[in-house]
Image 1 (tube, rainbow, N blue to C red):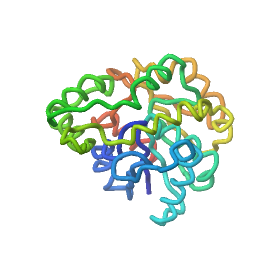
Image 2 (cartoon, one colour):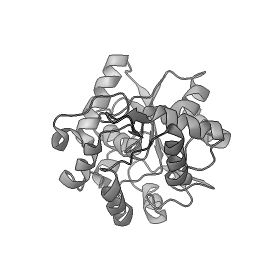
Image 3 (tube, rainbow, N blue to C red):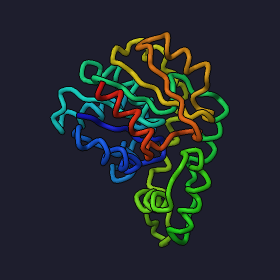
Length: 252
């Protein structure tokens, strides 16, 4: 059994490729975190948009699906959530943990950069314009076919009352970074994790820096690190070698 966690402003549909590939062996669930995709938006964003609440909701999802044990694959924020859940609400239930290009600390420069734009998503007249935007800002995800770029656009858009198109998340999710500014500083949680852990790192990533990755191998679960060439933040887990790396770890 397995579950997948999405990125800060992304949706569970980002896992379609790896979910399909691994579904021959695992029961896969790819939920949208609250405030993203088809999940509800909070009417108390300062309270609900934080890792502790996300971890409680993740446990509720596991209960609802009937997972007494599971593996967790999380990209970016989904990886941070995996760290929190594996140390708290799902500590006894996560068998193996896969963290995709995030660590128990968040470098200041990208943190400040994200704060400046995540709360003001752009608007577009067409899906094609949205796709072009994604091709630019998500270039560090690595190789995508034209069909995969179009799939990303079609599965992570919402229509505005004006008729224009924007990204499929609640702009208020940015409140986490102001109200809970140390939410992503998680070494104390990392040190409590006992599940075997694999960490994927995009070679060009600016969110999981080499020093932090090395420390992750000697603290807490003493993770195995695999570096992914041709990617920054974060490998999209949509190509055969990345999917095989995850499969081999989960099946070992």
